[in-house]
Image (cartoon, one colour):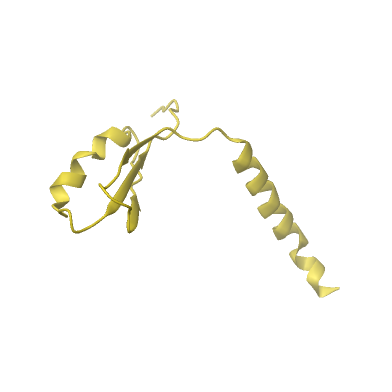
Length: 83
């Protein structure tokens, strides 16, 4: 019966997955390479920014056409912030 000690943890995971599946998907900014991507970068922003704030990073990295990298910049949901 020692395996029952993991039951609350398993239920927590199942609840989290179910809740995540019910949430609406985030809007994103995507920058795709010309061909099929070999890699992807998902760039998360901080408070007060959105996905568009980091679009210039792609050209500033100077990766060139040799690197087929897909960049994804998600927008977080807007929340009221008080200080």
